[in-house]
Length: 184
Ligand code: ZN
Image (tube, rainbow, N blue to C red; front, top):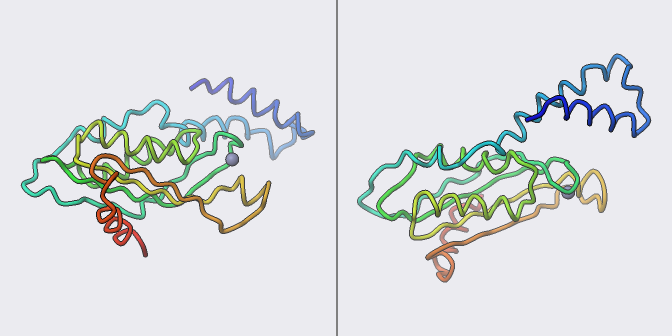
């Protein structure tokens, strides 16, 4: 990441909104934001395959569900946060990944400027590609601050996105089982 560019851009943004970039409270802000970008956009330089490559053999291909994975992301249209919970399930094909790796996979795709629809699909695609499971289902529930602090200002409204792959696509019973498992 080019921290100098980020700092220059933040200074320009502050000047653009009519701020005094030399006032004490703002002096360190460009550098602070540049450091923060390395963290909140750190997923751009990461490959979920690194987390999913360690796998274990299983005898029974029962559904694996990891629910309520908290994520924080940034909407690519406004560069404002959206955040919430991701629920990830797959039906193995003889191999499973470590449970914490599902949460890591969510992080890889959350830490990018994103739209929620694409993030949901990317998580499903990564699981499909690296675990070659019989099926994948991912549901993301996000609150978008670009809808709550600006624009239509509807606090508390949630955007829900769902992606199914493989056997989940056609099987309503499997989908229902997933929905029952992830609901509170
Ligand atoms: Zn937005």
